[in-house]
Image (spheres, rainbow, N blue to C red):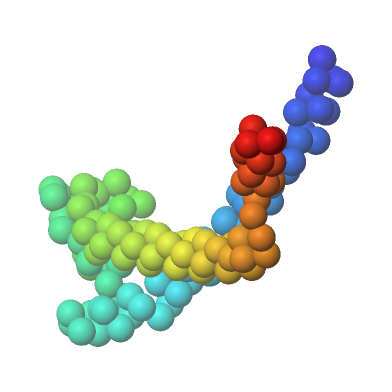
Length: 142
């Protein structure tokens, strides 16, 4: 069983996937920082608040033992108050859209790069199948 597991792990696809997951997690942190620290403060300023992720709607009574600010989303949530954190949701949606767009641009760039590498090979001459087809046709003629 250990040999099968080692063979499975040693396959190129599994190692490539592991590297992709690690790089993806690091990349997600960069995009999260870009969203939280740069984009969302600008959006928050436009819509009237510097911290857009702290916008919420209180859905019920504040717990009796709560002594913090009624405007502190994190503290209310920690205290168990029913809050609808729509600002945090908007922040996450913007983060997702940015991450998806950046990944789209990277895939598009990689696809174009791969196409450029394939074009000179196609211009170099006929493929092996085309050559074999020509040879077969020539042999039939003779």
